[in-house]
Image (cartoon, rainbow, N blue to C red; front, side, top):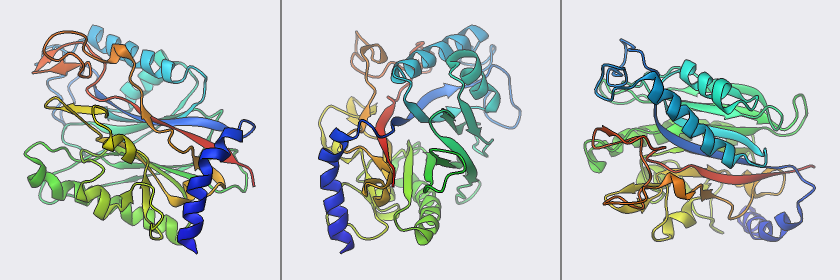
Length: 341
């Protein structure tokens, strides 16, 4: 019965959302913004390159340009003032994130952040529009790795559409799993550890409410078909035979399409940046993912326009040199609709 109702709900979404104009609808998204560092040296982390005297000659001028460029993209994403939640990766600290938010974006948004133990000194962060969603709780989950390795904490933020209401909450997780530096096979156990940390918390939530509304976003440094995503996190494409607790990878279709993705490696597109939802996000109650709405934000100016790397994301740094681009990743977005009970 559970599988049948899940399938029916998923199929009905296509038609249901075409008539949902009276229901609150908003965007959520994620973006690895590539090295948003301040210009000072933090002795506890490896950020020496991001100082005026460092390898990248990271000056106030370059930082200001970086913030202005990020703001251009975020404002265009939020052109209709409907961006409710934006997860971010590769932020050095609260101060630089708060500066981006308060001095550049200037939309009255709030910040969720905590300093994490990552050795590079980069964290995840989350921006949200308090006029669209209300923060009712937050947690930070440390990913414990073998040996002395350390990585980014996973952010958990709990939202409601209206503060103090009895509606079910929306749980949002922001991730940046360990990189593939050193080889995919050698580093696979690190991402499995991150996936297991997240899966344990997801099971706790679903144990209390099997139809809980959960959005998982991030740069997973693995693709939708890799073991950490499919086997450990148990995230797949829309599947009529899904088991209770299985998650829906809304970027599955994007992963199947040639010449599309969020990140380019050796000239080939891939989907490292993903948005994954619970089955409660397709049940037409409270918060729901709008079917087939997940997509990269891919305006022309985010790409290199000429030369050997034409068509690649326009990076901030490449080959150890400053190029002054936006990021090596594209933002990934989707639409969420709220159905009143």
